[in-house]
Structures are given as C-alpha cells and as structure tokens.
Length: 162
Image 1 (cartoon, rainbow, N blue to C red):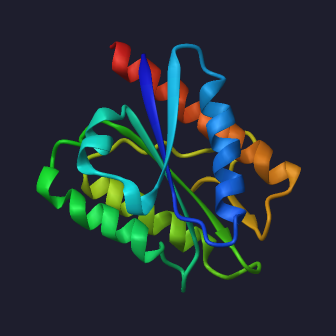
Image 2: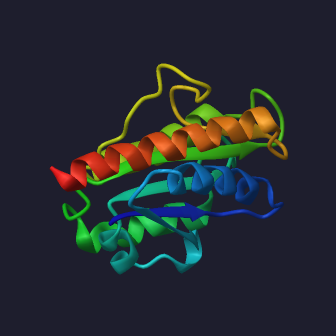
C-alpha cells in the first residue's frame, strides 16, 4: 500500500476545497491510501509514514502560511529521513498576481532541501509548480488538483514498489 499524506492549512475553506480535489485524484490510483491532516496537527511520525506528501497553503505575501512553515521547521529533527519521498504543493490566492507561484515554490524549496522528489507538471491541466486557485476553486481548478494528486500518487506507487 502506498501512503499519501495531504497536509493543508485553510482559513476560508478555499484551500481545503482544493485539497479535496488532490485527495480525489490520489485515491483514484489503485493501491493508494490517502490521509488528510491540518498542518498544525502533523507530526514527524506522520511525515515519516508517508510515501508522498502533498502540501497546500493559502498565499500570504507570496509565502506559505505560518502553520505550514512551522511543520517544515519541526521536521528538522528528522532531517534526511524524508529523502526520496514524493512531494508536491498547491495553493490558493485572493486575487490573480498575488504570489501563488512563489508560495508553491516556497513549499517545494522546503521539500527539496529535505531531499524529497518533486515532479514538475509539463502537460495536462496542472501548472508547472502545482495546482492553485483564485478564491474558491472552479471545476477547472479542481480538475488540475485531481490531476496533480493522481500523478503524485502514481509516482509514489512506482517508487515505493521499486
């Protein structure tokens, strides 16, 4: 069984709605279990138990939310042990041009520093840095989130069986 952990921080419900799309996509892959946790609840044991970690945050000044940053900061005590796990990021933003790409990159940077494998998205409906929505996700944005969840779960399943 491949374990996918979806971590989310959501205040308005927009990021949580996008997370639901990610989860739907991940669960569509045979042999994958998917768990959702709020960023403030995630422990290092949760991170270690996952084969893939997909993190969602609202955009705050072009960066991840403090709860998400705290989760990565707390993972310092397990530094090196996330190496090889698959990671991806998604975000929501209040208005176009408000920094969703840099928010995804801030999450991806933390994953890369941790040794995680982060795929790019060159085809399909997912933007290259990961899914995002402006406000409440539309069906198009949810399709992007499902695509990302499915692709990450498929890659994690391949890597965990290798």
